[in-house]
Structure formats: C-alpha cells, structure tokens
Image (tube, rainbow, N blue to C red):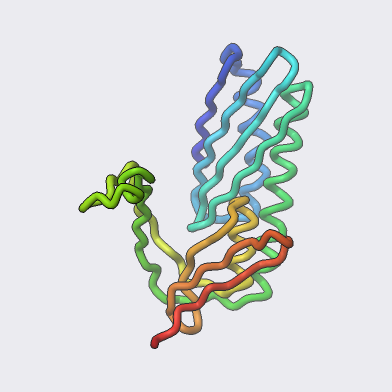
Length: 182
C-alpha cells in the first residue's frame, strides 16, 4: 500500500504518520490489489482537527473525511468510515457478477462560462481530465457514486455497453439517463 501523508497548518509528526499507516493497513483485507492512499491532515483554529483520505484501488475510488477536537480520533473515525464503505462495496460485489468487458476512456473538460455566454467561436477550456470508465451495473454505479460522494456518475452499462449517467435527485432518490437512438 502506498500512503502519502500531507500535513497542513501543523507540524510533521512521524508518530501520526506511523499511526495512519497502521490504521490504513486494516483495509488491505478488503482489496487484494495495490492501494494508493492520499491522506491530508489539517488543523484549523487549533481546535478543529481534520483527517481526509482518498484511496484508489482496482478502479475504485473512495473518499472519507472526519473532523474532531483530537487528530487521533479524527483518524480513527476516518478509517472506520472507509472500512464501512469497503465492507458495503465487497458485499454488493458478491451479489453482482462482474463483467469482463473492456473499459472505455472518457475525457472531461471544464469550460469558461464567459466563453460560452458570449458566443465565442471556440469555448475556452480551463481544465481537462481523462479517465477510464469500467462497465458496471446500475446498482454498482449508484454504489460507486455514493462511495465517491458525488452527485452524478458516467458509466458504461455492463449489459448494453451503452454510456449512461446516474445522478442523485433533489428528493434523495436516484435518476438514470440512458441514450436512445432516434
């Protein structure tokens, strides 16, 4: 497991770094693949201790963050939350058969609003990101969206091989956008 720890507004501590490595080693039992973890520890106003982690493993990305009055308890709560997410994910994977279909690559671009509003010939791209989309069921896409704590997720349906979008509605339910040929 690769763990990168960043300290913000606090002194770098080998004891805290070792504590994080020990705690995060517990999640290895849920995923066999190599795991990359980015941990950010920060202190605000000397009383708000925040621990955040982003873990990437086997095409799965999980995020967790907790804030308490003590850094060690924030780390404990953060790791517990990640562990619950992984348990839930592993249980759902047991219920679904996995597809061996190839993943697709998706490019995401962020445009400057003024370049679109003013009717410019070419919209100005602020940021571009490319990532692979793994074929999955709708249920697995909803679970992945929840793990990432996002409002929508673009995915390839494992049955139809079509690109779909699942999103969280304002009423708390989920919506699904499926393309149709006209």
